[in-house]
Length: 113
Image (spheres, rainbow, N blue to C red):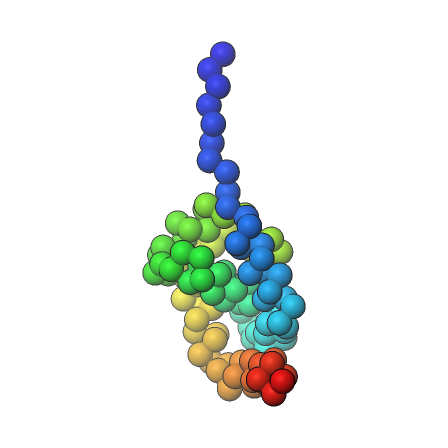
């Protein structure tokens, strides 16, 4: 019998950044996007693009290649399409004032220390 090896998916840096995302409270952005009529998990897709920028900066199409090489903890969507990434960015822009308010609220205590 022939033995073959498949490359493992990366986890360490993605897991650490996901935990940081949660501990800083950025998962609270989910509340902003819950009020939209979108069927995709916008917060998860935005998180995916942020993690990609931090781990292996790519274009939006590059994110689709990168996501195949990593194990994403707490990631809901089973598959990610370029269209979903674009729609998530649209949602981010549509709700920019609300997102800015949430992010400012999260960062204010860190800055005021």
